[in-house]
Length: 475
Image 1 (cartoon, rainbow, N blue to C red):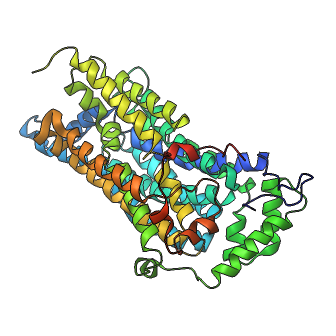
Image 2: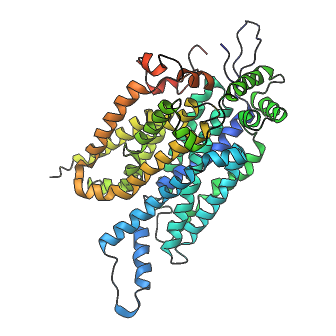
């Protein structure tokens, strides 16, 4: 059975799998630099919370005039800090709706290039906020970097999914999540008081996000555009052929191009869908529900409550060095992505529990939702589906960022029981409704939803999502 990016006609009669070429590595690495920035800006706001809040106090004091020194009321400070955290998600919510339009208009690669303008602007505003004594600049910068991350969260999985060979699509897809968690970990380490998490250096900590943006601006021009975009969307056979040759390293890519031609012929009967057309389509309702629920499962698991507020969580648990415990959570996060009345001892139990929570998150709801959307939809509805899924993710991200502190104050140490109940529901849905996609082409996956009985109705899954994070053993 032919699959994407394979060359036909090996000596043993089996089509050889595409080897990993230098161009493919460069393209994937350059793309996931955007995900690294995304993760960095999730984690960067956590460690320096106290010194930034102190800067807020000093800024407000400077504006109060001769009435004497006073501090921001605790309730006001909580709201201001929650807004600084959650405005990141507001930017992501807004820009996620533009993924489909921008990716079709500019193309996948050029859209990622242009998107870096937001990263540079946002990082510059955050880096200069303290010098200007302006918390408004910090909040605006967080909004812009959130808008950048919202586009990145859709563009990167879309680009990587379209350039990756079928047998490596799952493994390469997890690199998006791996880059995110590495970005979180880098932010947590740099945020230590011994490094950049100080009253004078925290603006540099926030402004460093411009560095991977500049690196991506340098590298992306050397990467090929998605051949699927070039041929199926733009109808440019020559550039698509050239892109395929660079990605595969083969002189003859006629077999791969034949697959794209077949996919294009089928898509001519299924024109690209707008956002409203997708929402009203019965044919795509089932995969759209799956995509949205998986995005909700990622955020409503409470994972970003850990990475936005873990310093406060560990302090509440009585951990002596909350910053280092936070870094420990980041290490566990990264390692498992690669695999995918107070009692004093309870502080250690809290650390172990949070580490375990992060570890199991990275086995399932962490990496899967970002790239499964690209797998569940064919080329026509894919950009609109990425927009809907991204908006769902960012909306729930905003709810967590803005509301967690208030829920934690109301529920105290039992706050994560709420997430446990939600996760149980998501587990049941995933087991019963989410299909296996390993080793199947985009066309095969999409067609499976159109058959009767459907794939979801006939499949009983003894496996877990982790099984398709790597290549099939028989490949």
